[in-house]
Image (cartoon, rainbow, N blue to C red):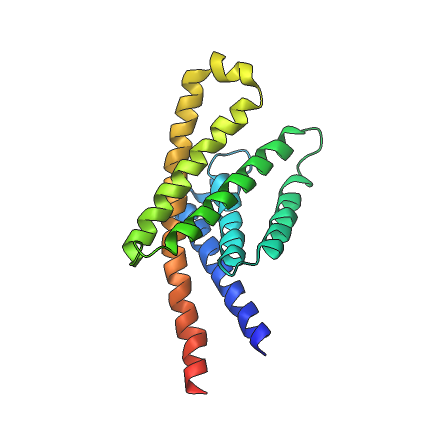
Amino acid sequence: MKNIETLKQAITRCFTISGLIIAIAFLIYRDEVFTPTMWPFQFLVSGITIGIAFTTFREKNYRGGLALLLLWYLVLTIPISQGNSWIFILEGVYTVIISAAVYLYIHIARKSFIKNEISRIVTSTLIIGIFNSLNILVLSLYTLQSLFSHFPSIVDAMFLNLKIGAMLGLFMGVGIELADYLIDTLYKSKDVGS
């Protein structure tokens, strides 16, 4: 019975975090969030990645989390990879770096100096923003020549990804707090009453 409650809480947490990120992005960018060729699509992909990573890493279920992230990576790459091997690299870099940012956030959020909701939301905004901008740097290292020949456009792309990442981090932080509230309200109050 406890495993079913834990699974319900995990699903609630994952859907709340991912859903909030995607819903707010949809309100801002509309259909572009669901268009793979548009940059707002990053909200959909990273939102689900964040939801999976946070939910599993929070419970220290690293093996399960990595398995779910691998499955998510395959869902992202296999249907649209025909004739485009770059998609494997692109989605792999984004999945790994965003997941690492979530892991770092969880580690920092457990420290005693991060005591309230606002400081956790600010922390998630900074970490996800910085790590998301690093995606561009890592991807440009794949072809080192382009790093030096297109440096100004790479810096522009890093700045855009910093802004997107900061929005992702802000939505993630709010989603985490909302998920915790929902879980406390929906599940923990039932435990007290029984």
